[in-house]
Length: 296
Image 1 (cartoon, helix red, strand yellow):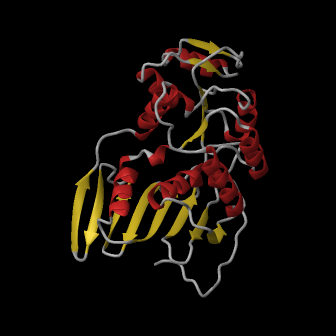
Image 2 (cartoon, rainbow, N blue to C red):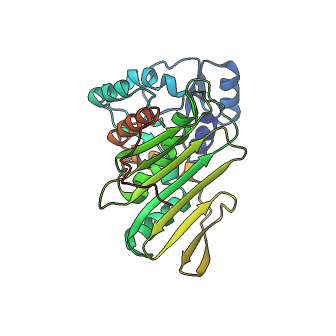
């Protein structure tokens, strides 16, 4: 459901994965594009036909409504992040859903995330101390939700994948109230690694950065050099090549394997609800206990 700016990429990868795809989108232009991208049929609205799986790639503000016809069924559903943009609606979906449901979080499949997970879990650089992410850009293209709703889910997913869980929100500060304004936030729990997030759509340039800080060194990814991660131990630094593995394609193939009887993709419904609740909290700046300082 949905074949807009991002849905067309999902359609491309579904077709590349050997799927016969029926696309439902109210836009005639989107339906025409879908046929050009390999859809087997296009519809102005979903007609309830039997299918093996459903992908929802409509605007965020419509996710809850788009999910409605499938919640009581048994067809596997993959919905684009975030689950929705309302914490109460997210909890209602959690309570009502009987269908197998996962949320699309492509950065959990990104080669840099996969490598940083291995470094953290195998202790390659010693114990994990913290994780910092930056996701900033100079434009906000979504009309239905603000930049925090579109950007922060990626980094919360990265933190969940690398650290195993997102620590409690301790402090946050918003840039402003306009749709492009972002937020900086610190998540922490005594005795566990911290997580610092910075997202915005009002910065002068686009950056995507992940920094894993460990007792014996650090490892980081920056989209200026997307083919590598850099690892530093003491005064020694090395560059490690990443595999050429498009994360959206990897995620789509995980969904296709799931509906064929394989393991479920990453991104559980409970995690998705937590993400919505955390992003809702990020919209309200909060002050920390000043005995705790932000990581340098």
